[in-house]
Length: 405
Ligand SMILES: [Zn+2]
Image 1 (tube, rainbow, N blue to C red):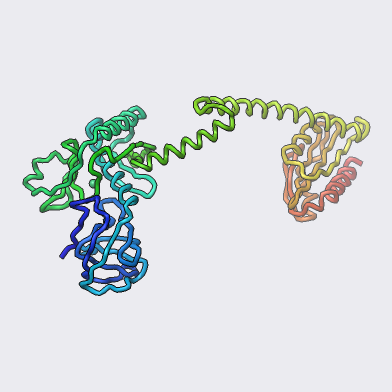
Image 2: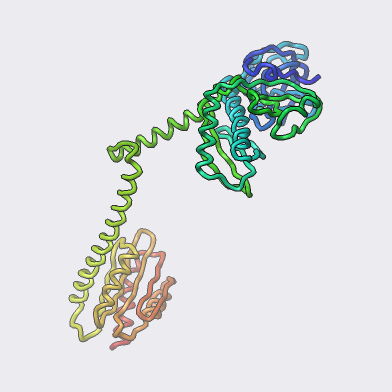
């Protein structure tokens, strides 16, 4: 005997008594088969119900290969004797939420078909949101808005949703969007002549109970369009969460929500301007710093070595200073900066000198196992040991003096 599925006739029944027909294990967990049950097993895309059965929690519900409903439990029943009657109660908020999403999907699929001639080719009901895939390459935002508004109008219309069985002959008379996958007597779920679907799922009584319906996203997927939607409390929760976020954002500007996007835009523009101004000011500052260092290094008619070890100076500001020093005549800049775990080195010279900075840096670093090199007038490199800075700068200065005498 197949398990009698009580939700077929009454999707609002939450408690029942069932007789144990079999006690089995499913993936190592105890499970029981009953003669009848309110528990919805994972099928048709709709997730299973949870709840209680006698002294245990029902943690999964599935259909066995013999077409029976197996209630997977968090532990063996205190007494699982065959023929014994047990009391079951489903987690109603979870089930009702699934009924809302599922009924909303029927409504939307028919709506997309009628409004735009788009067929639903796949549906998925997830723990957070649900999706339907349309056989359309894309949907313009106006169509999405139109479908959402029409769907909510149908919710307000409180159209009755009924489930009943028909014969194959009767089925031929019904305007189904898609032919059923099963034969024999077929269960039809009808939204008041608006939609007829062959479906074994659990649905709400009228479209009103679907509650607010929100289309949250569309994505293109392999030539199809995936629509993500929320019904009932999920749509409300989404609204509450977004309202809270926007309120927080508006509070940061001490403004109304409606003004917030414009204020963010204005602040980003200001930030860009300030960053540009800061860059110019930093450039000027480096210019002054370079001039001072050069003046302290001696008379302009002789090659002047500017050697400086900094602590924690960023590479960009090190390079910036080297660039400024290069602008002066007869200057060799030997700069290094030590941070926690590394040493950064930049060598540069004026265009009127002939020493090769790339070679100088490479030779200097080779003695201590560091890496670096570069062009004749500019070179940079690094070393894992930050304590060697002064030693390297002195070695490089000595080599330059040897070359220029
Ligand atoms: Zn359905």
